[in-house]
Amino acid sequence: MAPKAYPSKTANDFVFNKGIDDVRPEVFYFTTPEEMETSATNNNLTVIKNVGVDFSFCAKAINAMSDEQLEEWMVLSDVMSQSPSCVGVSNHALLICQNS
Image (tube, rainbow, N blue to C red; front, side, top):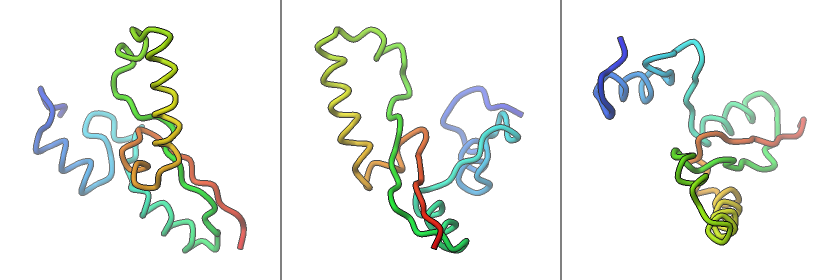
């Protein structure tokens, strides 16, 4: 049932309404930073930090960067990972919690 091109209505429905991948629903689960934090607090955890850990959909572009560009990319990536407004655009996130 995989769509031939993205974006598509099918992909959007799976991701936004079902929280799963349209091609490999048994592998990928999509969520938001807010949903992660709500789930944690509902389970008696205190959220300490919610950070994004990767911000690029194009590894080829990163691999093609000069050393200077890569150094600047790392600065940008570090800033983005610490910004609450950027966590939701990360491919993956790390939610650090403490038992309440």
